[in-house]
Image 1 (cartoon, one colour):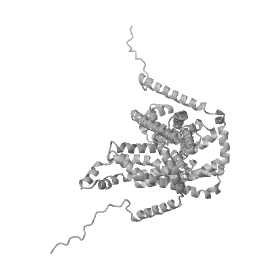
Image 2 (cartoon, one colour):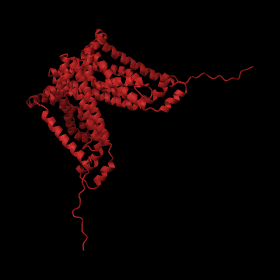
Image 3 (cartoon, helix red, strand yellow):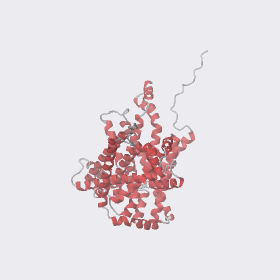
Length: 272
Length: 269
């Protein structure tokens, strides 16, 4: 007797078909190979004895850092004030420069797409791709160590950030409002003031406060290269191995950063 | 008898940005007081600034043309080291941040795990890379390993937090459907949660690669290896034309990474 049972091939569900599976596998292989290669190059330049020793070192360093030298806080008010000034004045400078650049970079307001816009975009990219510490490093050699170098460094670094976000906001405005203002017979300057500015104002205020918050964070470390603020004290304490002062300063830095984050969140919440 | 015309036509005035008058004036006066205080207490040594101006001009002219040749071997070595650090740190950072991020998602982690993972993220996020780098250089010695650890640690804070938030925002019904098939916890994670967060996380990984490259250029300043060390040395020696070359290379690589990561992100999503 012949069996009439149909033989169903046992097919197990699979997430991907064979070709995709193979491509995914290849991508993983390639990624792993790149990673292993990179890590091996790093490991060649590492003295592993020091790395293995690190936990003991960390415990030792930690024990030297407690308790924080609370009394030293009286010497820190001035550097904290300087740090705040670096961030705030730097932000103001960057806004003054970034607004015209954003105006030139936005596709709908730029005087010339072929010539002015690429220049503005290049300024934005150049400012953004160089870290504020590197700006500070340059400026300290040029204008000398101190708060002034820090302010300029923060200003130059922030131009790109503010201008980029602002020009994106300008490009997203509602053109019909601008046209309505123009239809009343407004001059180009009036069109800008009454048609464009009110539309980007909330975004602009938000961007400014956001950048100010980031700048507080960054200005705490600018002193490491000599550009004033609390980083200068931190660097001095580290080089002189006053670890209890170092831990106090780290606490102060964290407190400043958290406070500025809170303020900026509140303000942005109020604006938007 | 003529109808009395309204005296003078009222001119339209732009409404003020802040409607409450007292708040507006407090803000204006406060800003003025702060600015005068800040500018009054900021000591600027104008003589020194004036003295530095020729050096500034010298620095700007160094860009035309920058000197790529005389320090070429050092520059190539520094850039290569920076790139290894970036890649290795991004990979390790992301791998480590996945468990932390899962633990920090309130909807899938038990409360003690949640608090622990959230505090790890908070510590990692509140310190600047450069401060972390100082300590890691102290612990691990000079060289790219310290920079690698710094960037990995900073990546955990960034990536873990965003991953946790993404998991918290996921669609619970999809995950529940997978669970209803009788999947184990790992299977549930792999088929119910991961596909929902994957596209965005790949994009963020590429974005973090970009950030890590920028940051790795500065960890060198405090001894963490890479191009930052080369740049710092060239500034200290007033070799502005080599410094200009390095800065241009950094800008070019950042632009290349930014564009390619933007392209890849669009391709993934």
